[in-house]
Image 1: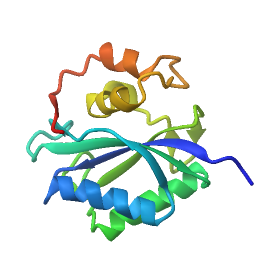
Image 2: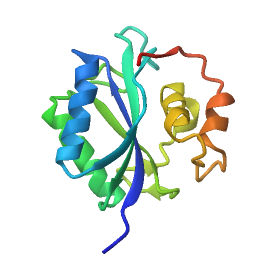
Image 3: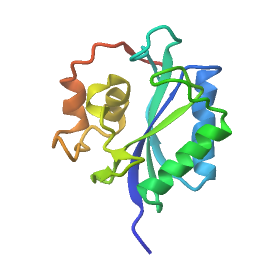
Image 4: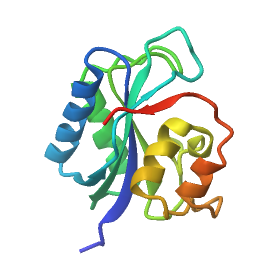
Length: 163
């Protein structure tokens, strides 16, 4: 039996009951067989790219799965669909967004998926929660820890810990 892969997932919501949306997404991921090992605190974050929208609640999960990255992407997209995510425009408002940020120190590049997430190192809304739960995890392409990337980030957007 193949060894389970270790994933870090970024969750975000800025429509409806944002906290409840994150909680429901975690429950649906677990129901689909994704084993959530750790969850960061929830953070209230400033929108990126399109400022004229509600602020986000963001969270990062450390999870395990026997699925390859493409299979986990399918699960994540099915959870988004079950939660009635409507894809409008890039960086637009959404009830839930689930991104695969990292996978077992590996790089994945397909037509559908790039891991590590190509903008992970530029976004405090994922770097700060990653630093909280996985400060020593190394970005496989940059060779730097999440702590270092977060501490040296040039992103000046607001990230407020809620719990």
